[in-house]
Image (cartoon, rainbow, N blue to C red; front, side, top):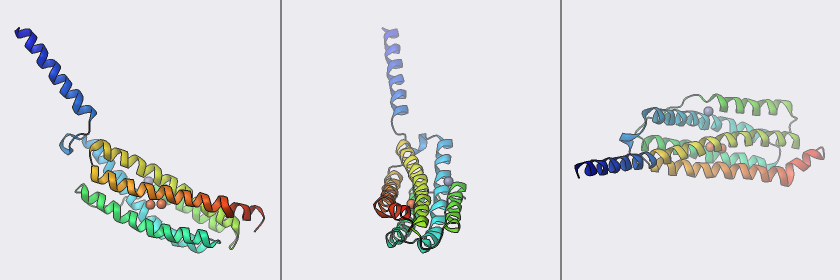
Length: 194
Ligand code: FE
Ligand code: ZN
Ligand code: FE
């Protein structure tokens, strides 16, 4: 009887341990290393978004077609919002909003600048190049926000997950709009030598 009780107790405690490892944990139970990694990645994308607010006006100015100019202007406003949303995310985690240089975004923006240098002003070919450069940026952001949102869910940071998800959707929309501009117009104009 005594042995049986002991065995039962063991089974229950094992069950409990299994439950807590598979479901979202509270802040106290979280892995400190993963949390630190999560915060570091937030600092990286915070720098990246701020950097983009400086790059997008240059891309807008360099664009030939009005549609693309408008797309860059709209995405500048969206990007300012993304910066503000990240500040909300930091706040929800009781962390200071600190920017940490993102080498990837610096490189992607540099590529965009060299496309402007290598193409002629007022041509559709320049727009083709600008769209490709901008889509590389959007895909980097989609990967980042997608990963961060999922990590926030895993760690039980529900408020952060919701905010990151909003931005993720806007990055996807921006990417789709760029595809539409390329496929409905700009690519064909460039192919016709315009
Ligand atoms: Fe963004
Ligand atoms: Zn980065
Ligand atoms: Fe973006």
